Image (cartoon, rainbow, N blue to C red; front, side, top):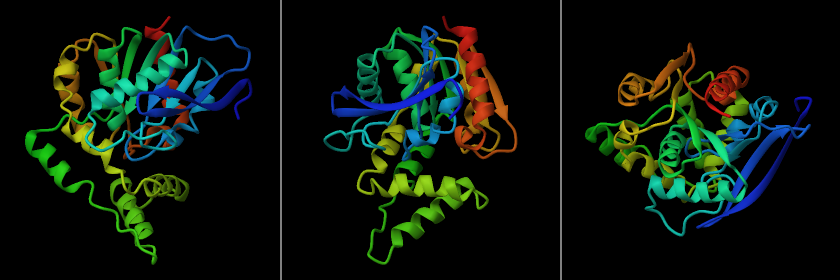
Length: 274
Protein backbone atom coordinates (compact mmCIF):
# COMPACT_ATOMS: atom_id res chain seq x y z
CA UNK A 1 0.00 0.00 0.00
CA UNK A 2 1.20 3.52 -0.72
CA UNK A 3 2.41 5.26 2.45
CA UNK A 4 -0.10 7.75 3.82
CA UNK A 5 -3.10 6.12 2.15
CA UNK A 6 -5.83 3.97 3.65
CA UNK A 7 -8.04 1.67 1.61
CA UNK A 8 -11.30 0.04 2.63
CA UNK A 9 -14.49 -1.46 1.24
CA UNK A 10 -18.11 -1.07 2.24
CA UNK A 11 -21.69 -1.32 1.03
CA UNK A 12 -24.33 1.33 0.46
CA UNK A 13 -27.97 1.02 -0.43
CA UNK A 14 -29.33 1.38 -3.93
CA UNK A 15 -32.80 0.66 -5.32
CA UNK A 16 -31.84 -2.93 -6.24
CA UNK A 17 -30.01 -3.78 -3.04
CA UNK A 18 -26.50 -3.14 -1.82
CA UNK A 19 -23.77 -1.53 -3.92
CA UNK A 20 -20.21 -2.58 -3.08
CA UNK A 21 -17.66 0.27 -3.13
CA UNK A 22 -13.86 0.28 -2.84
CA UNK A 23 -12.35 3.40 -1.28
CA UNK A 24 -8.97 5.05 -0.88
CA UNK A 25 -8.09 8.29 0.90
CA UNK A 26 -5.18 10.04 2.63
CA UNK A 27 -4.62 8.80 6.18
CA UNK A 28 -4.21 12.35 7.47
CA UNK A 29 -7.90 12.95 6.84
CA UNK A 30 -7.24 16.06 4.76
CA UNK A 31 -9.45 15.68 1.70
CA UNK A 32 -10.23 17.75 -1.33
CA UNK A 33 -13.91 18.64 -1.50
CA UNK A 34 -14.10 16.75 -4.78
CA UNK A 35 -14.02 12.95 -4.84
CA UNK A 36 -12.87 10.86 -7.76
CA UNK A 37 -15.42 8.18 -8.70
CA UNK A 38 -14.42 5.31 -10.98
CA UNK A 39 -16.77 3.12 -13.06
CA UNK A 40 -15.49 -0.16 -14.52
CA UNK A 41 -16.13 -1.86 -17.85
CA UNK A 42 -18.43 -4.86 -18.29
CA UNK A 43 -18.34 -7.67 -17.31
CA UNK A 44 -15.62 -6.93 -14.76
CA UNK A 45 -15.68 -5.27 -11.35
CA UNK A 46 -14.02 -2.54 -9.33
CA UNK A 47 -11.03 -4.88 -8.96
CA UNK A 48 -9.73 -3.33 -12.20
CA UNK A 49 -8.95 -0.17 -10.17
CA UNK A 50 -7.14 -1.90 -7.27
CA UNK A 51 -3.61 -1.05 -8.43
CA UNK A 52 -4.52 2.58 -9.04
CA UNK A 53 -6.61 3.28 -5.94
CA UNK A 54 -3.71 3.71 -3.48
CA UNK A 55 -1.99 6.08 -5.92
CA UNK A 56 -5.00 8.33 -6.47
CA UNK A 57 -5.87 8.03 -2.77
CA UNK A 58 -2.81 10.12 -1.89
CA UNK A 59 -4.68 13.21 -3.08
CA UNK A 60 -8.37 12.78 -2.37
CA UNK A 61 -11.19 10.38 -1.55
CA UNK A 62 -11.50 7.86 -4.38
CA UNK A 63 -14.50 5.53 -4.77
CA UNK A 64 -14.85 2.60 -7.16
CA UNK A 65 -18.31 0.99 -7.08
CA UNK A 66 -19.22 -2.36 -8.56
CA UNK A 67 -21.96 -1.87 -11.15
CA UNK A 68 -25.15 -3.58 -9.90
CA UNK A 69 -25.00 -7.24 -10.88
CA UNK A 70 -21.19 -7.26 -11.15
CA UNK A 71 -18.49 -7.89 -8.58
CA UNK A 72 -20.10 -7.86 -5.13
CA UNK A 73 -23.05 -5.54 -5.88
CA UNK A 74 -26.58 -6.91 -5.85
CA UNK A 75 -28.16 -7.25 -9.32
CA UNK A 76 -31.42 -5.82 -10.60
CA UNK A 77 -34.29 -8.24 -10.23
CA UNK A 78 -34.16 -9.09 -13.96
CA UNK A 79 -32.45 -8.27 -17.23
CA UNK A 80 -33.53 -5.32 -19.36
CA UNK A 81 -32.52 -2.40 -17.16
CA UNK A 82 -31.12 0.58 -19.05
CA UNK A 83 -28.02 2.71 -18.53
CA UNK A 84 -29.92 5.65 -16.95
CA UNK A 85 -31.31 3.19 -14.38
CA UNK A 86 -27.86 1.76 -13.62
CA UNK A 87 -26.57 5.31 -13.23
CA UNK A 88 -29.40 6.26 -10.86
CA UNK A 89 -28.83 3.13 -8.76
CA UNK A 90 -25.12 3.87 -8.36
CA UNK A 91 -25.74 7.57 -7.74
CA UNK A 92 -28.09 6.70 -4.86
CA UNK A 93 -25.34 4.63 -3.25
CA UNK A 94 -22.75 7.38 -3.77
CA UNK A 95 -25.01 9.94 -2.11
CA UNK A 96 -25.56 7.60 0.82
CA UNK A 97 -21.77 7.25 1.02
CA UNK A 98 -21.58 11.01 1.54
CA UNK A 99 -20.17 12.16 -1.80
CA UNK A 100 -20.69 15.91 -2.16
CA UNK A 101 -18.78 16.81 -5.33
CA UNK A 102 -17.19 14.43 -7.80
CA UNK A 103 -15.27 13.91 -10.98
CA UNK A 104 -16.61 10.77 -12.66
CA UNK A 105 -14.42 8.40 -14.67
CA UNK A 106 -15.79 5.58 -16.80
CA UNK A 107 -14.42 2.83 -19.03
CA UNK A 108 -16.66 1.46 -21.83
CA UNK A 109 -19.94 0.57 -20.04
CA UNK A 110 -18.64 2.68 -17.18
CA UNK A 111 -18.24 5.59 -19.60
CA UNK A 112 -21.94 5.41 -20.47
CA UNK A 113 -22.76 5.34 -16.74
CA UNK A 114 -20.49 8.34 -16.13
CA UNK A 115 -22.19 10.31 -18.92
CA UNK A 116 -25.60 9.60 -17.40
CA UNK A 117 -24.57 10.44 -13.84
CA UNK A 118 -23.28 13.78 -15.16
CA UNK A 119 -26.80 14.37 -16.55
CA UNK A 120 -28.57 13.28 -13.37
CA UNK A 121 -26.50 15.09 -10.73
CA UNK A 122 -25.37 18.68 -10.27
CA UNK A 123 -22.54 17.38 -8.06
CA UNK A 124 -20.40 16.34 -11.04
CA UNK A 125 -17.53 18.76 -11.66
CA UNK A 126 -15.80 16.90 -14.50
CA UNK A 127 -16.10 13.81 -16.68
CA UNK A 128 -13.37 11.44 -17.89
CA UNK A 129 -14.32 8.89 -20.57
CA UNK A 130 -12.19 5.92 -21.63
CA UNK A 131 -13.85 4.37 -24.68
CA UNK A 132 -17.31 5.69 -25.55
CA UNK A 133 -19.75 3.28 -27.22
CA UNK A 134 -20.85 5.75 -29.87
CA UNK A 135 -22.25 3.21 -32.32
CA UNK A 136 -24.05 3.32 -35.64
CA UNK A 137 -27.37 1.47 -35.79
CA UNK A 138 -25.63 -1.32 -37.70
CA UNK A 139 -22.84 -1.59 -35.12
CA UNK A 140 -25.38 -1.54 -32.30
CA UNK A 141 -27.32 -4.41 -33.87
CA UNK A 142 -24.12 -6.39 -34.44
CA UNK A 143 -22.97 -6.02 -30.84
CA UNK A 144 -26.41 -6.86 -29.47
CA UNK A 145 -26.58 -9.98 -31.60
CA UNK A 146 -23.06 -11.33 -31.27
CA UNK A 147 -20.95 -9.85 -28.45
CA UNK A 148 -22.49 -11.73 -25.51
CA UNK A 149 -23.12 -15.36 -26.45
CA UNK A 150 -24.12 -17.81 -23.69
CA UNK A 151 -21.16 -19.08 -21.69
CA UNK A 152 -20.75 -22.86 -21.98
CA UNK A 153 -20.66 -23.99 -18.35
CA UNK A 154 -19.71 -27.67 -18.14
CA UNK A 155 -18.08 -30.04 -15.67
CA UNK A 156 -15.21 -30.37 -18.15
CA UNK A 157 -14.39 -26.69 -17.69
CA UNK A 158 -15.39 -25.40 -21.13
CA UNK A 159 -16.20 -22.06 -19.48
CA UNK A 160 -12.53 -21.51 -18.58
CA UNK A 161 -11.38 -22.15 -22.13
CA UNK A 162 -14.13 -19.85 -23.45
CA UNK A 163 -13.12 -17.03 -21.13
CA UNK A 164 -9.39 -17.39 -21.83
CA UNK A 165 -9.93 -17.30 -25.60
CA UNK A 166 -12.25 -14.31 -25.23
CA UNK A 167 -9.70 -12.20 -23.38
CA UNK A 168 -6.82 -13.30 -25.59
CA UNK A 169 -8.91 -12.12 -28.54
CA UNK A 170 -10.00 -8.73 -27.21
CA UNK A 171 -7.04 -7.89 -24.92
CA UNK A 172 -4.22 -9.58 -26.82
CA UNK A 173 -2.20 -12.77 -26.52
CA UNK A 174 0.46 -10.92 -24.52
CA UNK A 175 -1.94 -9.94 -21.72
CA UNK A 176 -0.31 -10.66 -18.34
CA UNK A 177 -1.53 -13.76 -16.54
CA UNK A 178 -2.74 -11.80 -13.51
CA UNK A 179 -5.00 -9.66 -15.70
CA UNK A 180 -6.42 -12.72 -17.41
CA UNK A 181 -7.04 -14.33 -14.04
CA UNK A 182 -8.89 -11.24 -12.80
CA UNK A 183 -11.07 -11.02 -15.90
CA UNK A 184 -11.82 -14.74 -16.04
CA UNK A 185 -12.69 -14.81 -12.34
CA UNK A 186 -15.04 -11.86 -12.68
CA UNK A 187 -16.92 -13.03 -15.75
CA UNK A 188 -17.27 -16.64 -14.58
CA UNK A 189 -18.69 -15.51 -11.25
CA UNK A 190 -21.76 -14.12 -13.07
CA UNK A 191 -22.22 -16.47 -16.03
CA UNK A 192 -26.00 -16.09 -15.98
CA UNK A 193 -25.99 -12.30 -16.16
CA UNK A 194 -22.62 -11.18 -17.52
CA UNK A 195 -24.43 -9.77 -20.56
CA UNK A 196 -26.91 -7.52 -18.70
CA UNK A 197 -24.71 -4.42 -18.47
CA UNK A 198 -23.21 -5.05 -21.90
CA UNK A 199 -26.62 -5.18 -23.52
CA UNK A 200 -27.72 -2.02 -21.71
CA UNK A 201 -24.61 -0.24 -23.02
CA UNK A 202 -25.26 -1.46 -26.58
CA UNK A 203 -28.86 -0.23 -26.42
CA UNK A 204 -27.80 3.15 -25.02
CA UNK A 205 -27.14 6.02 -27.43
CA UNK A 206 -24.83 8.51 -25.69
CA UNK A 207 -25.01 11.17 -28.40
CA UNK A 208 -27.94 13.23 -27.01
CA UNK A 209 -26.32 13.41 -23.58
CA UNK A 210 -22.89 14.18 -25.00
CA UNK A 211 -24.25 17.11 -26.99
CA UNK A 212 -25.58 18.76 -23.83
CA UNK A 213 -22.76 17.76 -21.50
CA UNK A 214 -21.85 20.89 -19.54
CA UNK A 215 -18.94 19.65 -17.46
CA UNK A 216 -15.30 19.79 -18.61
CA UNK A 217 -14.53 16.46 -20.25
CA UNK A 218 -11.35 14.46 -20.85
CA UNK A 219 -11.21 11.59 -23.32
CA UNK A 220 -8.43 9.42 -21.85
CA UNK A 221 -7.82 6.43 -24.06
CA UNK A 222 -5.37 3.76 -25.06
CA UNK A 223 -4.18 4.08 -28.65
CA UNK A 224 -5.59 0.72 -29.73
CA UNK A 225 -8.69 0.55 -27.52
CA UNK A 226 -11.64 -1.07 -29.27
CA UNK A 227 -13.57 2.22 -29.07
CA UNK A 228 -10.71 4.73 -29.51
CA UNK A 229 -11.76 5.55 -33.07
CA UNK A 230 -14.85 7.26 -31.62
CA UNK A 231 -12.84 9.87 -29.72
CA UNK A 232 -12.74 12.52 -32.50
CA UNK A 233 -16.51 12.18 -32.94
CA UNK A 234 -17.09 12.52 -29.20
CA UNK A 235 -14.79 15.53 -28.95
CA UNK A 236 -16.74 17.27 -31.71
CA UNK A 237 -19.98 16.75 -29.78
CA UNK A 238 -18.85 17.97 -26.35
CA UNK A 239 -18.37 21.71 -25.96
CA UNK A 240 -15.53 21.61 -23.40
CA UNK A 241 -13.48 18.55 -24.24
CA UNK A 242 -9.91 17.46 -24.87
CA UNK A 243 -8.28 14.12 -25.69
CA UNK A 244 -5.23 12.38 -24.26
CA UNK A 245 -4.05 9.16 -25.90
CA UNK A 246 -1.71 6.72 -24.14
CA UNK A 247 0.35 5.20 -26.97
CA UNK A 248 1.00 1.54 -27.64
CA UNK A 249 -1.75 0.02 -25.50
CA UNK A 250 -4.95 -1.87 -26.32
CA UNK A 251 -6.86 -0.64 -23.28
CA UNK A 252 -7.25 -1.46 -19.58
CA UNK A 253 -5.30 1.65 -18.53
CA UNK A 254 -5.81 1.38 -14.74
CA UNK A 255 -4.44 -2.17 -14.78
CA UNK A 256 -1.64 -1.77 -17.31
CA UNK A 257 -0.37 1.71 -16.41
CA UNK A 258 -1.89 2.69 -13.04
CA UNK A 259 0.68 5.41 -12.30
CA UNK A 260 0.14 7.15 -15.64
CA UNK A 261 -3.63 6.83 -15.35
CA UNK A 262 -3.65 8.19 -11.80
CA UNK A 263 -1.47 11.14 -12.83
CA UNK A 264 -3.72 12.08 -15.74
CA UNK A 265 -6.84 11.83 -13.60
CA UNK A 266 -5.37 13.92 -10.79
CA UNK A 267 -4.18 16.64 -13.15
CA UNK A 268 -7.62 16.87 -14.71
CA UNK A 269 -9.39 16.78 -11.35
CA UNK A 270 -7.21 19.51 -9.83
CA UNK A 271 -7.88 21.72 -12.83
CA UNK A 272 -11.65 21.45 -12.55
CA UNK A 273 -12.47 20.64 -8.92
CA UNK A 274 -12.65 22.52 -5.63
